[in-house]
Length: 433
Image 1 (cartoon, one colour):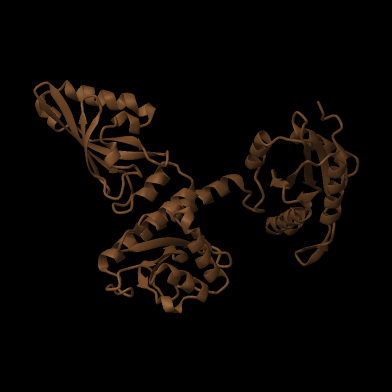
Image 2: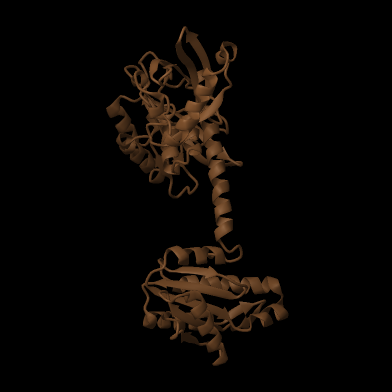
Protein backbone atom coordinates (compact mmCIF):
# COMPACT_ATOMS: atom_id res chain seq x y z
CA UNK A 1 0.00 0.00 0.00
CA UNK A 2 1.20 3.52 -0.75
CA UNK A 3 0.21 4.80 2.69
CA UNK A 4 0.66 8.49 3.52
CA UNK A 5 1.19 9.95 6.99
CA UNK A 6 0.19 13.58 7.58
CA UNK A 7 0.43 15.90 10.56
CA UNK A 8 -2.49 18.32 10.24
CA UNK A 9 -2.86 21.49 12.32
CA UNK A 10 -6.20 22.63 13.74
CA UNK A 11 -6.83 25.00 10.76
CA UNK A 12 -6.33 22.14 8.27
CA UNK A 13 -2.76 23.06 7.27
CA UNK A 14 -0.53 20.05 6.55
CA UNK A 15 2.67 20.64 8.54
CA UNK A 16 4.44 17.33 7.92
CA UNK A 17 4.29 14.63 5.24
CA UNK A 18 5.80 11.14 5.41
CA UNK A 19 5.54 8.01 3.25
CA UNK A 20 3.48 7.92 0.07
CA UNK A 21 6.16 5.83 -1.63
CA UNK A 22 5.86 6.05 -5.40
CA UNK A 23 3.38 8.91 -5.20
CA UNK A 24 -0.03 9.12 -3.60
CA UNK A 25 -2.82 9.11 -6.23
CA UNK A 26 -0.35 10.86 -8.51
CA UNK A 27 0.07 13.80 -6.13
CA UNK A 28 3.48 15.34 -5.47
CA UNK A 29 3.91 14.13 -1.89
CA UNK A 30 6.56 16.64 -0.66
CA UNK A 31 4.52 19.52 -2.12
CA UNK A 32 1.60 18.65 0.15
CA UNK A 33 3.40 20.25 3.12
CA UNK A 34 2.08 23.75 3.65
CA UNK A 35 -1.15 23.14 1.74
CA UNK A 36 -4.55 22.71 3.36
CA UNK A 37 -6.35 19.37 3.50
CA UNK A 38 -9.50 20.97 2.11
CA UNK A 39 -7.64 21.70 -1.13
CA UNK A 40 -7.40 17.97 -1.80
CA UNK A 41 -10.93 16.74 -1.17
CA UNK A 42 -14.17 17.28 -3.13
CA UNK A 43 -16.15 20.33 -2.05
CA UNK A 44 -19.07 18.05 -1.22
CA UNK A 45 -16.97 16.27 1.45
CA UNK A 46 -15.65 19.43 3.13
CA UNK A 47 -18.44 19.86 5.67
CA UNK A 48 -18.40 16.19 6.69
CA UNK A 49 -14.64 16.26 7.26
CA UNK A 50 -14.76 19.48 9.26
CA UNK A 51 -17.61 18.23 11.45
CA UNK A 52 -15.78 14.96 12.12
CA UNK A 53 -12.78 16.74 13.62
CA UNK A 54 -14.84 19.42 15.38
CA UNK A 55 -16.90 16.74 17.09
CA UNK A 56 -13.73 14.88 18.09
CA UNK A 57 -12.18 18.02 19.60
CA UNK A 58 -15.20 18.34 21.87
CA UNK A 59 -14.58 14.89 23.32
CA UNK A 60 -12.30 14.06 26.23
CA UNK A 61 -8.57 13.57 25.73
CA UNK A 62 -8.95 9.82 26.09
CA UNK A 63 -11.33 9.50 23.15
CA UNK A 64 -9.45 12.08 21.08
CA UNK A 65 -6.39 9.86 21.15
CA UNK A 66 -8.19 7.05 19.30
CA UNK A 67 -11.01 8.39 17.10
CA UNK A 68 -12.75 5.97 14.77
CA UNK A 69 -11.31 5.49 11.27
CA UNK A 70 -13.48 6.66 8.43
CA UNK A 71 -13.54 6.90 4.64
CA UNK A 72 -13.42 10.00 2.48
CA UNK A 73 -12.55 10.92 -1.10
CA UNK A 74 -9.34 12.58 -2.24
CA UNK A 75 -8.91 14.30 -5.60
CA UNK A 76 -5.96 12.75 -7.44
CA UNK A 77 -3.76 14.42 -10.01
CA UNK A 78 -5.95 12.82 -12.69
CA UNK A 79 -8.91 14.92 -11.49
CA UNK A 80 -10.93 11.92 -10.33
CA UNK A 81 -12.05 11.36 -6.75
CA UNK A 82 -10.57 8.29 -5.06
CA UNK A 83 -11.86 6.66 -1.86
CA UNK A 84 -9.29 6.74 0.93
CA UNK A 85 -9.35 5.15 4.37
CA UNK A 86 -8.42 7.66 7.10
CA UNK A 87 -6.95 6.51 10.43
CA UNK A 88 -6.58 9.64 12.60
CA UNK A 89 -4.97 10.10 15.99
CA UNK A 90 -5.55 13.38 17.84
CA UNK A 91 -2.90 15.08 19.98
CA UNK A 92 -3.12 18.09 22.28
CA UNK A 93 -0.40 20.33 23.69
CA UNK A 94 -2.04 22.87 25.98
CA UNK A 95 -4.47 24.75 23.76
CA UNK A 96 -2.85 23.58 20.51
CA UNK A 97 -4.47 20.74 18.66
CA UNK A 98 -3.07 18.67 15.80
CA UNK A 99 -3.88 15.41 14.12
CA UNK A 100 -1.62 12.63 12.91
CA UNK A 101 -3.51 11.06 10.02
CA UNK A 102 -2.70 7.86 8.12
CA UNK A 103 -4.21 7.72 4.62
CA UNK A 104 -4.52 4.49 2.63
CA UNK A 105 -6.10 4.17 -0.85
CA UNK A 106 -9.09 1.86 -0.91
CA UNK A 107 -8.41 -0.95 -3.37
CA UNK A 108 -9.26 -4.58 -3.96
CA UNK A 109 -5.59 -5.55 -3.96
CA UNK A 110 -2.97 -4.47 -1.44
CA UNK A 111 -0.01 -4.12 -3.77
CA UNK A 112 -1.68 -2.78 -6.92
CA UNK A 113 -3.84 0.19 -6.09
CA UNK A 114 -3.88 2.95 -8.64
CA UNK A 115 -5.65 1.11 -11.49
CA UNK A 116 -8.32 -0.25 -9.18
CA UNK A 117 -8.69 3.16 -7.55
CA UNK A 118 -9.28 4.69 -10.97
CA UNK A 119 -11.88 2.05 -11.81
CA UNK A 120 -13.72 2.64 -8.53
CA UNK A 121 -13.59 6.39 -9.24
CA UNK A 122 -15.41 5.84 -12.55
CA UNK A 123 -12.50 6.63 -14.87
CA UNK A 124 -12.72 5.57 -18.54
CA UNK A 125 -11.41 2.10 -19.29
CA UNK A 126 -8.69 3.49 -21.54
CA UNK A 127 -7.24 5.44 -18.62
CA UNK A 128 -7.43 2.41 -16.31
CA UNK A 129 -5.63 0.26 -18.90
CA UNK A 130 -2.86 2.82 -19.25
CA UNK A 131 -2.48 2.92 -15.48
CA UNK A 132 -2.02 -0.87 -15.44
CA UNK A 133 1.07 -0.34 -17.60
CA UNK A 134 2.24 2.37 -15.20
CA UNK A 135 1.96 0.32 -11.99
CA UNK A 136 5.39 -1.34 -12.16
CA UNK A 137 7.17 1.12 -14.40
CA UNK A 138 10.72 1.99 -13.29
CA UNK A 139 12.94 4.66 -14.81
CA UNK A 140 16.10 5.60 -12.93
CA UNK A 141 19.87 5.60 -13.32
CA UNK A 142 20.13 1.82 -13.07
CA UNK A 143 16.90 0.37 -14.39
CA UNK A 144 14.38 1.01 -17.12
CA UNK A 145 11.13 -0.89 -17.49
CA UNK A 146 8.31 -0.25 -19.92
CA UNK A 147 5.20 -2.33 -19.37
CA UNK A 148 2.89 -3.07 -22.28
CA UNK A 149 -0.52 -4.71 -22.09
CA UNK A 150 -1.26 -6.76 -25.20
CA UNK A 151 -4.99 -7.39 -25.66
CA UNK A 152 -5.52 -10.57 -27.69
CA UNK A 153 -9.29 -10.89 -27.43
CA UNK A 154 -9.12 -10.71 -31.23
CA UNK A 155 -5.86 -12.49 -32.18
CA UNK A 156 -6.10 -11.09 -35.72
CA UNK A 157 -6.11 -7.50 -34.40
CA UNK A 158 -4.07 -7.36 -31.19
CA UNK A 159 -4.18 -4.09 -29.28
CA UNK A 160 -1.03 -2.93 -27.52
CA UNK A 161 -1.54 -0.46 -24.67
CA UNK A 162 1.21 1.63 -23.12
CA UNK A 163 1.31 4.02 -20.17
CA UNK A 164 2.53 7.26 -21.75
CA UNK A 165 2.51 8.96 -25.12
CA UNK A 166 6.29 8.78 -25.44
CA UNK A 167 6.07 4.98 -25.20
CA UNK A 168 3.76 4.71 -28.22
CA UNK A 169 6.69 4.03 -30.57
CA UNK A 170 7.56 1.01 -28.41
CA UNK A 171 3.94 -0.16 -28.44
CA UNK A 172 3.79 0.22 -32.22
CA UNK A 173 6.95 -1.88 -32.65
CA UNK A 174 5.50 -4.63 -30.45
CA UNK A 175 2.16 -4.51 -32.25
CA UNK A 176 3.89 -4.87 -35.61
CA UNK A 177 5.88 -7.83 -34.32
CA UNK A 178 2.73 -9.54 -32.99
CA UNK A 179 0.43 -8.67 -35.88
CA UNK A 180 2.72 -8.93 -38.90
CA UNK A 181 5.58 -11.03 -37.66
CA UNK A 182 3.55 -13.62 -35.79
CA UNK A 183 5.56 -12.98 -32.62
CA UNK A 184 3.73 -14.63 -29.70
CA UNK A 185 6.07 -14.31 -26.71
CA UNK A 186 3.54 -15.83 -24.30
CA UNK A 187 3.51 -19.17 -26.14
CA UNK A 188 4.51 -21.93 -23.76
CA UNK A 189 4.15 -19.73 -20.66
CA UNK A 190 1.62 -21.26 -18.30
CA UNK A 191 -1.16 -19.59 -16.41
CA UNK A 192 0.20 -17.86 -13.32
CA UNK A 193 3.77 -17.94 -14.60
CA UNK A 194 6.26 -15.13 -15.20
CA UNK A 195 8.96 -15.91 -17.73
CA UNK A 196 12.07 -14.13 -19.06
CA UNK A 197 12.42 -13.79 -22.84
CA UNK A 198 15.58 -14.10 -24.91
CA UNK A 199 15.85 -10.74 -26.70
CA UNK A 200 18.14 -12.17 -29.38
CA UNK A 201 15.17 -14.14 -30.69
CA UNK A 202 12.89 -11.10 -31.16
CA UNK A 203 11.79 -9.93 -34.63
CA UNK A 204 14.47 -7.75 -36.22
CA UNK A 205 12.61 -4.42 -36.03
CA UNK A 206 11.80 -4.85 -32.35
CA UNK A 207 15.28 -6.09 -31.58
CA UNK A 208 16.86 -3.08 -33.33
CA UNK A 209 14.67 -0.68 -31.38
CA UNK A 210 15.75 -2.29 -28.11
CA UNK A 211 19.42 -2.23 -29.09
CA UNK A 212 19.20 1.51 -29.83
CA UNK A 213 17.92 2.10 -26.30
CA UNK A 214 20.32 -0.28 -24.61
CA UNK A 215 17.45 -2.51 -23.52
CA UNK A 216 18.42 -6.12 -23.07
CA UNK A 217 15.69 -7.46 -20.82
CA UNK A 218 12.16 -8.73 -21.39
CA UNK A 219 9.61 -10.54 -19.26
CA UNK A 220 6.17 -11.88 -20.18
CA UNK A 221 3.17 -12.81 -18.04
CA UNK A 222 -0.06 -14.09 -19.67
CA UNK A 223 -3.47 -12.99 -18.41
CA UNK A 224 -6.25 -15.59 -18.35
CA UNK A 225 -9.91 -14.81 -17.73
CA UNK A 226 -12.26 -17.74 -17.19
CA UNK A 227 -9.82 -20.28 -18.62
CA UNK A 228 -9.09 -18.27 -21.75
CA UNK A 229 -6.00 -16.17 -22.41
CA UNK A 230 -7.14 -12.67 -23.30
CA UNK A 231 -4.03 -10.58 -22.72
CA UNK A 232 -0.39 -10.58 -21.71
CA UNK A 233 1.95 -8.16 -19.98
CA UNK A 234 5.33 -7.70 -21.65
CA UNK A 235 8.20 -5.83 -20.01
CA UNK A 236 10.94 -4.25 -22.11
CA UNK A 237 13.86 -2.49 -20.48
CA UNK A 238 17.43 -2.47 -19.28
CA UNK A 239 19.26 -3.65 -16.18
CA UNK A 240 22.86 -3.17 -14.99
CA UNK A 241 25.42 -5.24 -16.90
CA UNK A 242 26.07 -7.27 -13.75
CA UNK A 243 22.44 -8.39 -13.65
CA UNK A 244 21.32 -11.54 -15.41
CA UNK A 245 18.45 -10.46 -17.70
CA UNK A 246 17.22 -14.06 -17.85
CA UNK A 247 16.70 -14.22 -14.09
CA UNK A 248 13.43 -13.07 -12.53
CA UNK A 249 13.67 -12.55 -8.79
CA UNK A 250 10.90 -13.94 -6.61
CA UNK A 251 9.80 -10.53 -5.36
CA UNK A 252 9.59 -9.23 -8.94
CA UNK A 253 7.57 -12.25 -10.04
CA UNK A 254 5.23 -11.78 -7.07
CA UNK A 255 4.61 -8.13 -8.00
CA UNK A 256 4.00 -9.06 -11.63
CA UNK A 257 1.48 -11.73 -10.65
CA UNK A 258 -0.25 -9.24 -8.35
CA UNK A 259 -0.60 -6.98 -11.39
CA UNK A 260 -1.97 -9.91 -13.41
CA UNK A 261 -4.56 -10.66 -10.71
CA UNK A 262 -5.67 -7.04 -10.60
CA UNK A 263 -5.98 -7.09 -14.39
CA UNK A 264 -8.10 -10.23 -14.25
CA UNK A 265 -10.43 -8.56 -11.74
CA UNK A 266 -10.84 -5.57 -14.03
CA UNK A 267 -11.38 -7.62 -17.19
CA UNK A 268 -13.94 -9.83 -15.48
CA UNK A 269 -15.74 -6.75 -14.16
CA UNK A 270 -15.80 -5.17 -17.63
CA UNK A 271 -16.95 -8.40 -19.25
CA UNK A 272 -19.85 -8.66 -16.81
CA UNK A 273 -20.74 -5.00 -17.34
CA UNK A 274 -20.73 -5.47 -21.11
CA UNK A 275 -22.88 -8.59 -20.87
CA UNK A 276 -25.45 -6.80 -18.70
CA UNK A 277 -25.45 -3.81 -21.03
CA UNK A 278 -25.90 -6.08 -24.04
CA UNK A 279 -28.73 -7.97 -22.38
CA UNK A 280 -30.47 -4.71 -21.53
CA UNK A 281 -30.20 -3.21 -25.01
CA UNK A 282 -30.18 -6.13 -27.45
CA UNK A 283 -32.83 -8.49 -28.75
CA UNK A 284 -31.67 -11.93 -27.60
CA UNK A 285 -32.87 -13.77 -30.72
CA UNK A 286 -31.66 -11.55 -33.55
CA UNK A 287 -28.93 -9.44 -31.97
CA UNK A 288 -30.69 -6.26 -33.11
CA UNK A 289 -31.61 -3.37 -30.83
CA UNK A 290 -34.50 -4.24 -28.54
CA UNK A 291 -37.52 -2.01 -28.05
CA UNK A 292 -36.07 -0.25 -25.00
CA UNK A 293 -32.82 0.61 -26.75
CA UNK A 294 -34.53 1.79 -29.93
CA UNK A 295 -36.93 4.05 -28.06
CA UNK A 296 -34.07 5.47 -25.98
CA UNK A 297 -32.11 6.19 -29.14
CA UNK A 298 -35.09 7.90 -30.77
CA UNK A 299 -35.55 10.00 -27.64
CA UNK A 300 -31.98 11.31 -27.59
CA UNK A 301 -30.87 11.19 -31.23
CA UNK A 302 -33.91 12.61 -33.01
CA UNK A 303 -32.87 14.30 -36.25
CA UNK A 304 -33.93 14.52 -39.90
CA UNK A 305 -34.56 11.21 -41.59
CA UNK A 306 -37.18 8.50 -41.80
CA UNK A 307 -38.46 5.53 -39.84
CA UNK A 308 -39.73 2.27 -41.34
CA UNK A 309 -42.13 0.03 -39.40
CA UNK A 310 -41.77 -3.49 -40.85
CA UNK A 311 -44.36 -6.16 -40.03
CA UNK A 312 -44.17 -9.77 -41.23
CA UNK A 313 -47.41 -10.78 -42.94
CA UNK A 314 -49.26 -13.76 -41.48
CA UNK A 315 -46.28 -14.89 -39.44
CA UNK A 316 -48.61 -16.82 -37.14
CA UNK A 317 -49.13 -19.38 -39.90
CA UNK A 318 -45.38 -20.09 -39.97
CA UNK A 319 -45.37 -20.83 -36.23
CA UNK A 320 -48.58 -22.87 -36.45
CA UNK A 321 -47.34 -24.95 -39.38
CA UNK A 322 -43.66 -25.44 -38.56
CA UNK A 323 -43.36 -24.65 -34.85
CA UNK A 324 -41.74 -21.83 -32.92
CA UNK A 325 -38.17 -23.08 -33.35
CA UNK A 326 -38.47 -22.81 -37.12
CA UNK A 327 -40.31 -19.52 -36.69
CA UNK A 328 -37.35 -18.15 -34.73
CA UNK A 329 -35.02 -19.25 -37.52
CA UNK A 330 -37.16 -17.33 -40.01
CA UNK A 331 -37.01 -14.18 -37.85
CA UNK A 332 -33.22 -14.44 -37.64
CA UNK A 333 -33.02 -14.68 -41.44
CA UNK A 334 -35.32 -11.67 -41.83
CA UNK A 335 -33.06 -9.72 -39.48
CA UNK A 336 -30.01 -10.75 -41.53
CA UNK A 337 -31.66 -9.63 -44.77
CA UNK A 338 -32.61 -6.29 -43.23
CA UNK A 339 -29.02 -5.75 -42.14
CA UNK A 340 -27.72 -6.58 -45.61
CA UNK A 341 -29.81 -3.75 -47.09
CA UNK A 342 -29.07 -1.01 -44.59
CA UNK A 343 -26.24 1.51 -44.32
CA UNK A 344 -23.75 1.63 -41.47
CA UNK A 345 -25.46 4.68 -39.98
CA UNK A 346 -28.91 3.06 -39.95
CA UNK A 347 -30.34 1.41 -36.83
CA UNK A 348 -32.45 -1.72 -36.85
CA UNK A 349 -34.51 -3.01 -33.98
CA UNK A 350 -36.93 -5.82 -33.23
CA UNK A 351 -39.69 -4.32 -31.14
CA UNK A 352 -42.23 -7.17 -31.16
CA UNK A 353 -42.58 -10.81 -32.08
CA UNK A 354 -42.58 -10.22 -35.85
CA UNK A 355 -42.21 -6.43 -35.94
CA UNK A 356 -39.02 -4.61 -36.89
CA UNK A 357 -38.10 -0.94 -37.07
CA UNK A 358 -35.47 0.58 -39.33
CA UNK A 359 -34.29 4.13 -38.63
CA UNK A 360 -32.78 5.90 -41.65
CA UNK A 361 -30.93 9.09 -40.59
CA UNK A 362 -30.89 11.71 -43.33
CA UNK A 363 -33.26 9.79 -45.61
CA UNK A 364 -36.12 11.81 -47.10
CA UNK A 365 -39.52 10.36 -48.03
CA UNK A 366 -38.34 9.37 -51.53
CA UNK A 367 -35.24 7.52 -50.37
CA UNK A 368 -37.16 5.87 -47.50
CA UNK A 369 -39.72 4.64 -50.03
CA UNK A 370 -36.97 3.20 -52.23
CA UNK A 371 -35.38 1.38 -49.28
CA UNK A 372 -38.79 0.08 -48.18
CA UNK A 373 -39.38 -1.33 -51.68
CA UNK A 374 -35.96 -3.04 -51.65
CA UNK A 375 -36.73 -4.56 -48.24
CA UNK A 376 -40.04 -5.96 -49.52
CA UNK A 377 -38.28 -7.49 -52.55
CA UNK A 378 -35.34 -8.89 -50.56
CA UNK A 379 -37.41 -10.49 -47.80
CA UNK A 380 -39.82 -11.82 -50.43
CA UNK A 381 -37.08 -13.95 -51.99
CA UNK A 382 -37.46 -17.72 -51.50
CA UNK A 383 -36.62 -18.98 -48.04
CA UNK A 384 -35.80 -22.51 -46.90
CA UNK A 385 -38.25 -23.30 -44.12
CA UNK A 386 -37.86 -26.78 -42.63
CA UNK A 387 -36.60 -28.10 -45.95
CA UNK A 388 -39.38 -26.48 -47.94
CA UNK A 389 -39.25 -23.42 -50.15
CA UNK A 390 -41.36 -20.72 -48.58
CA UNK A 391 -41.97 -17.06 -49.31
CA UNK A 392 -42.41 -14.43 -46.64
CA UNK A 393 -43.90 -11.02 -47.26
CA UNK A 394 -43.73 -7.86 -45.17
CA UNK A 395 -45.78 -4.69 -45.03
CA UNK A 396 -44.09 -1.39 -44.23
CA UNK A 397 -45.26 1.96 -42.99
CA UNK A 398 -42.84 4.87 -42.99
CA UNK A 399 -42.84 8.28 -41.40
CA UNK A 400 -40.44 11.20 -41.10
CA UNK A 401 -38.38 11.39 -37.93
CA UNK A 402 -39.54 14.94 -37.32
CA UNK A 403 -43.09 13.71 -36.74
CA UNK A 404 -44.41 14.15 -33.22
CA UNK A 405 -44.28 10.37 -32.69
CA UNK A 406 -42.64 8.78 -35.75
CA UNK A 407 -42.99 5.24 -34.39
CA UNK A 408 -46.73 5.60 -33.87
CA UNK A 409 -47.18 7.34 -37.22
CA UNK A 410 -45.29 4.61 -39.09
CA UNK A 411 -47.25 1.92 -37.23
CA UNK A 412 -50.56 3.44 -38.31
CA UNK A 413 -49.30 3.72 -41.89
CA UNK A 414 -48.29 0.04 -41.81
CA UNK A 415 -51.76 -1.00 -40.58
CA UNK A 416 -53.38 1.07 -43.33
CA UNK A 417 -51.09 -0.57 -45.90
CA UNK A 418 -52.15 -4.02 -44.65
CA UNK A 419 -55.78 -3.08 -45.25
CA UNK A 420 -54.75 -2.18 -48.81
CA UNK A 421 -53.46 -5.66 -49.50
CA UNK A 422 -50.18 -6.38 -47.64
CA UNK A 423 -46.74 -6.78 -49.19
CA UNK A 424 -46.55 -3.03 -49.84
CA UNK A 425 -45.39 0.18 -48.17
CA UNK A 426 -47.15 3.44 -47.34
CA UNK A 427 -45.98 6.86 -46.22
CA UNK A 428 -47.71 8.34 -43.19
CA UNK A 429 -48.60 11.57 -44.95
CA UNK A 430 -50.57 12.80 -41.96
CA UNK A 431 -47.70 12.28 -39.53
CA UNK A 432 -46.09 15.68 -39.98
CA UNK A 433 -46.98 18.39 -37.45
